[in-house]
Length: 277
Image (tube, rainbow, N blue to C red; front, side, top):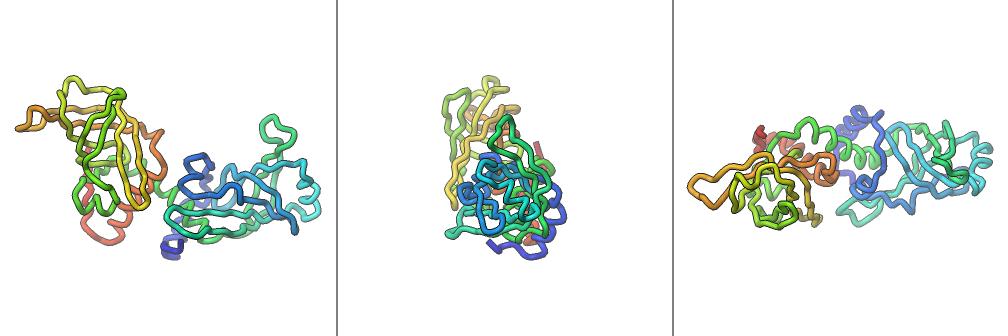
């Protein structure tokens, strides 16, 4: 942690402070939230809770009310501290901090009589670590839509920046694995080269495997083949355009691409990405 400049963290805060992120399984994994170590501190007591969603200004948490927490809140005028604990990918140590807040509302969660959803309003700007962790997620989500058609060619330099192990990969077409070579990737799709006949591959459902390193992650991204054409001079080869199912894109995949594109712009280097479809 602490890699981002204070200016970048301030930019994250101003851009995204009102946007709430729901802690789905994907978000929990990519942020490294240690769910068993998240608690509400009220007075000198701690209550386990589950973070349902959070922004830079507020949060919603779920907690068991049979433990006496409601009475304790009355005694502290609804003031609490929300304890977060993260272990970001690639970090050896956990990041733990408290965010002061006030409980603004409490209501039964679903049909449960034992569990309530608590709405918390943060008393101050949260710690920079929290803004950095959540800001990367929010920035990647925004840019994955805004820059979804920016193509990143699989040059050696780009592969090094992305930590892609090899341009050689595999694509599963209607469940059948086929060897392929990555030519480019983007938030919205990929171009690949493989053996085959173009007319038999159009509009087929497919899943593309992409291997990353540091940390090692393997994605199998679903999509549909929207373009298929022969390769000049190689009758047995075909170039395919795969359109990803963006609703199923892993958040960590978005973050990897966004970090690479953002770093490239920040370093004032020639952007290797080309607009295309």
